[in-house]
Length: 447
Ligand SMILES: *[C@@H]1O[C@H](CO)[C@@H](O)[C@H](O)[C@H]1NC(C)=O
Ligand SMILES: *[C@@H]1O[C@H](CO)[C@@H](O)[C@H](O)[C@H]1NC(C)=O
Ligand SMILES: *[C@@H]1O[C@H](CO)[C@@H](O)[C@H](O)[C@H]1NC(C)=O
Ligand SMILES: *[C@@H]1O[C@H](CO)[C@@H](O)[C@H](O)[C@H]1NC(C)=O
Image (cartoon, rainbow, N blue to C red; front, side, top):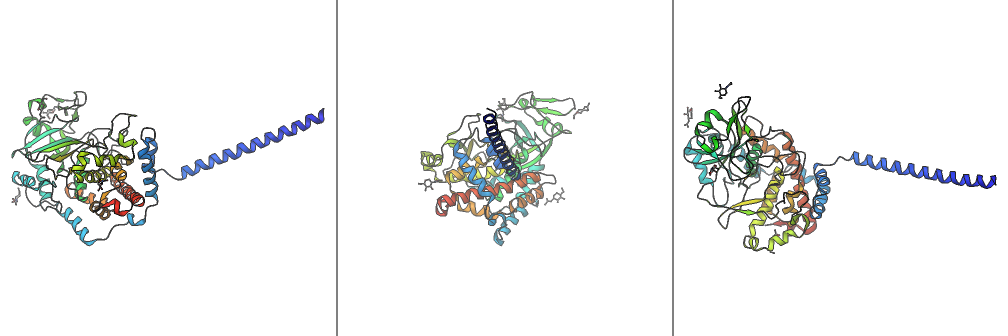
């Protein structure tokens, strides 16, 4: 009996030991693999992808994974500046154009109206008076101010003596505020409008309206000339600052914007000439703006082809390519809120880059799905690709920050946002490289 029991115990011990060894091996493995994960820090796009896994469709995860992986192993070619004397000269011209040559006047401001054509809002090759016009826009007295009730956010409609109009988007956040949440979260970022305008020139897509940073003394400059409807929304707070809530969809007395030391800071955006009719269209790649409700483009990887054969786009073959350019512009500035797009009511009009306020919200995140028109269509104008190459290897952020320094003594874009631009540009290249690998250069680069 005891012999049998002993044999039984030995067997049990053996099994027990084996179990312990197995548990140890598993534990070690788990620790090791966890360490490996910690050792490779996730990129912002990686993190974005993980955060979005639960809400986003498969169509985008497939591309996003490849674009992120591809950007980590991307050829050094995309990380060094391009040495092209001709293009360097052009970029230097864009900077020199920002010098102020002429005193501010209504007449000077009015000259900018003549720059607007059906194709562009500012001359593509450069305009020596641009700096002077920006200066005029920043300093000329205004003659009236009204609410701008169209749209969801508080804006002011400002008029100059010559009757030129401009939209004022007030400052809601300090420059270094980080907007968390969905890509369209938060209110307009005034500095985003200003930076986006200059970026559009660098990208060779001069279709963003002229925008400057401007500060108004509300009691001296705005209150005496404000419309009764707007004035009704003015009040003073406990710090004796003037607050206003304006007239718009989301405007509410509980949510006013207030002056700082009597000054209202923001972006002043020149209105386009009234005689040039603008039409608004739904963006095919718009978001649903509802949690857990996916749009077609988020689940259907053949979405681009379907858009391309629809009547509207068949009749306007350049618009889809414009939307692809626009998606690159928007991805760089982190604008995921282009639910509609505008064009002049002229058949040849390009897509305009109006309303860039929901940009530069979070320099730590890259919303790759803004690029969906690019990676789902796998097509890009050759001229756009060429221009991106001119801006690679640090050139983009260097020139953008130099442009802003020409016009402003104060910071417009923080270093974190400038770094984000470089990181995102590399992701754009990764998307193009991915497409060329899949479809071939002939297919992808549209000449
Ligand atoms: C610009 O204004 C300054 C000071 O107001 C004046 O001295 C100068 O002559 C003006 N220049 C031109 C070109 O009008
Ligand atoms: C300002 O608000 C009033 C009242 O809602 C409206 O009638 C008017 O059209 C608005 N002005 C502009 C320029 O939107
Ligand atoms: C509040 O501000 C107004 C206008 O800016 C000024 O005239 C007034 O003296 C201020 N009141 C106090 C108590 O500071
Ligand atoms: C749309 O279809 C046309 C005709 O097949 C094709 O030439 C063009 O490249 C397509 N555009 C995009 C963006 O896929």
